[in-house]
Length: 90
Image 1 (tube, rainbow, N blue to C red):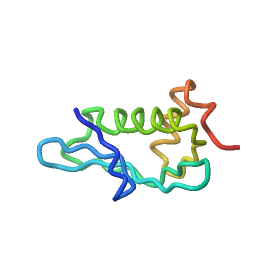
Image 2 (spheres, rainbow, N blue to C red):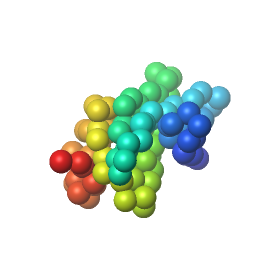
Image 3 (tube, rainbow, N blue to C red):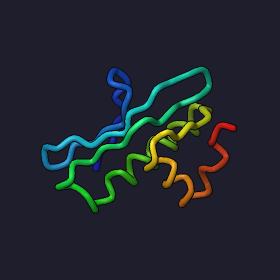
Image 4 (cartoon, rainbow, N blue to C red):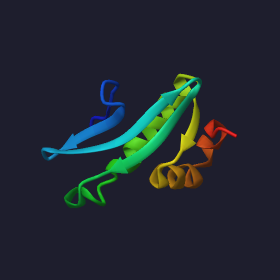
């Protein structure tokens, strides 16, 4: 599965079986704000959202960005993966 950072659209995205999944974000000084995750229903259960969240959080770490998880999926992912807890903005 390929995941790319589409900076023009401000989202991490993946196309599987011709369907687009994505995590939308906004950038602020020293922060990345994850706004919304969307995976088409017919692709549910394939781990697409999980891989996109991991890629997005790894991107935040590499770019020294604090994370604001307004998106409930990304917030839950961070809770399940404490290795990303240090990225969360206070």
